[in-house]
Structure formats: structure tokens, C-alpha cells
Length: 170
Length: 122
Image 1: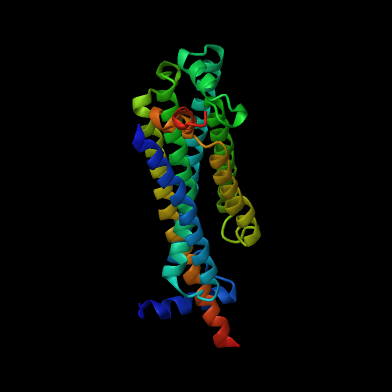
Image 2 (image 1 turned 180 degrees about the vertical axis):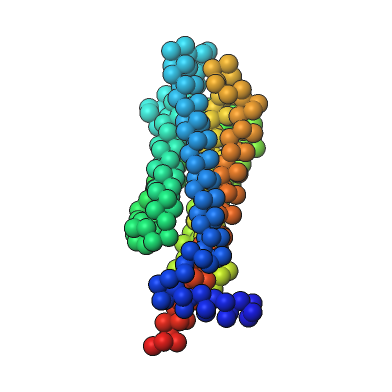
């Protein structure tokens, strides 16, 4: 640890003088890191776009040829837009778009480099990462997939019906 | 499947927690600019949230397709779905984490070094 200190000092001295940045090994490590991060963001964008495409294709195919099950699910949970098999997909689209925008933002941020405008202004991160991820969470909760995830005998509406049938008041 | 709702709930509860801890660490880093652990925690946790969201989204599409018995409407075979997308997700996360740790840590050391230079000069 201490042995690197003189090196860092010498290097920062050179930096302070405004020269020799390119010659430094640490800077090249920084550039490599930057490229790996950009690569990772590209991988994320490619897979995510492919996923959104898969969802949209599934959605349109199912819409044009509804199955027995989609009709049943639609009838059993006729609670409007917020709880149906399609609302689950709308929730997915909204959350996916927010994550995509975030990844594009991060990509631009890193592509601009170390002294870029986005990376040196913290506010952008709060708007394009923190806020977007917050709304992704809101979307996932508004369009909660409980309809498709809960076991058939434990779904909210069914248990309310069971309670009603058991109640002496009815 | 009864386990699915639990799995999903755990995921959706874990994500905001991860983010909150991340931003708390970031706030703590304000007065600890020299601390590498605090710096790493905030960088990794803030970075981790989107891939986790993505994983839960992949899971939901898979379960939706299964629930609707609409396997043959899917472009990607259902049995490969989670594998394909989660693998991509993990690779993307690891690359970002690896890249950022070498990029950002050198950046921190770089700033710290210059900072100490400035204080020495002044």
C-alpha cells in the first residue's frame, strides 16, 4: 500500500502539471475498465431489447388468437385494466422501457469518458437512474402479477367468494 | 405454483432495499471520500438494482406464458427462457461491475491523489 504512494504522488504531480497522463499505467487500466463497462451495458441492451421483442411478439400472437385460458382468466378477473393477463404485460413494458432508458443513459455517460458532462454532473444520475428505477418499482406494483403467480385456490377474489358463502349474513 | 408469488415478493422487496442501502452508502461517502469500501458498496448496489428488476421481469413473462398455456406462442422456448435471459443479465452485470471497479476505483485513487496534492500545495 505504502509503496504505491510515491508512485501516485509522482503521477499526480505530472497530472497537476498537465502532462504525461497517457503514459500512466493506471490511466490505461481506467480506459480498459471503461470499455468493459460499456461492453456490459451493450450486452444488457441487446438482451433486453430481445426480451422486449419476445414479449411483444407473444402479446400480439396471443391477442390475434386468444386461447381458452386467456378467455377464462379474463372472465374470472374482470377487474378492469389493472388485473388481467394483459395488464401484466403492460407492467412489463413500462418497467422494461424505464430500464432500457437507464441503460442507454449509462452507456452515454461512460462513452463520454471520465471528464464527460453526464458523469461530472450528479443530478443526471438521480434523474436517469434513481428516479427511473423508482418508477419501475411503482409500475411493477401497480400492475402486480399476482393474478398469474398465486396458486389457484388462494387467489384473493376466490377466497372472498368462499368467505361470502360461509358467512351466515348472506 | 405457490412458490412463485413468494419468489417474486422476495425479489421485489429485495430490490428497493438494495437500492436504499446503496444510496445511504452514497450519502455516507460524501463525508468519507477516501473510503474505498463505502465507495464500492454504493457503486455495486446502485448498479445491481436494474439487473434484479430485469430478472424479475423475465420470471414474470415465463410464468405468464405457462399460466396461459401459451407455450407455442413464444419466440423463445419456455424451458430456455429463464436460462437465456438470466445468463445475459448476469454477464452484463458482471462486466459492468468488473469494468466499474477498475474504472471507478482508479478514478477514486486518482481524485484522492490529486486532492492530497492540492492540500499539500495549499
